[in-house]
Image (cartoon, rainbow, N blue to C red):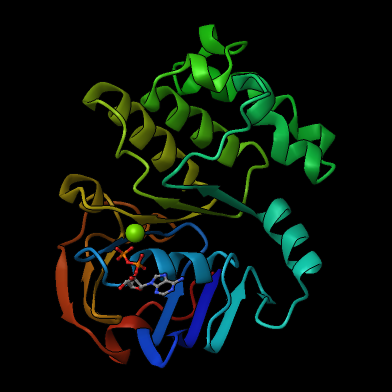
Length: 251
Ligand SMILES: Nc1ncnc2c1ncn2[C@@H]1O[C@H](COP(=O)(O)OP(=O)(O)O)[C@@H](O)[C@H]1O
Ligand SMILES: [Mg+2]
């Protein structure tokens, strides 16, 4: 579902070249849940942005849902993102002039997917905001805005969901609700989540640890739900191609 081939990212500021990602290889299966962890500044958000087609790599290729997006034009990429991907940003990026319900409906309207509009009410209910449907973002708390953003990410029933610290602004009971909703989506979608929360990372099929732009460790938590169900022993693998390629062939 996701294939990263030798992804590198450098930023040029004045005379200095900063290499933020080094030769990242990664494959993610169709219903796999990947947690990306690592210290602040290790490249998590940059990697997520490149995986999600929001940012371009300096080197390497990104293949999503069988489409090599590396060389797509901005407009092709925008349409692909809108129809196939869902995003939960760290800053929620809700539209202030629209109600919660209208915000949730935006991706389906932008990408002309009218058959998906009916999902909006149900998603708001599932994030516990049925009674806030007609409130504007300024009338919502940070945690409520976060939940609207999550409902919005799911409205198109995307093949892949990307989330950067989605439980950061949620108290524990709402955080739990969101975690359940996200886990439920992995029955039909891949989920790539950046998190500092060890309990959340513990729920993933694999945890990818970054440090200084390298994958330093891949921790396999349990068998992918796409395979035979049932618990399996968690394992730790050192970073490297062997650890990643163990998952090859899964779609
Ligand atoms: N647009 C940019 N220009 C220059 N440096 C950047 C830019 N975006 C991120 N960086 C740098 O890249 C590194 C990784 O950032 P980021 O991916 O946001 O890390 P994380 O999400 O793990 O905290 C940081 O050192 C950050 O300062
Ligand atoms: Mg970040």
